[in-house]
Image (cartoon, one colour):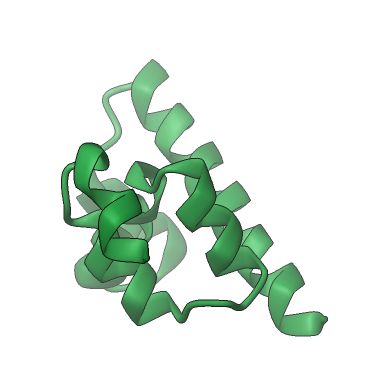
Length: 85
């Protein structure tokens, strides 16, 4: 249960950071500086925003790992459902 909350929080925090970038000229470098995380960490979390709802839900419900979610997120959204099966 605790892991599910962490994964949901990851998606929520990533959405907030992305929305902040949309309203101001923030960059990944700015997010790296503010969060203390690496650029690759930031990019990996931002990629999760590209997940279709079905896959995002599977990630938050621990049916797939963060690594699997990131791999699927790299695919076009039209191909994600097929890759998820």
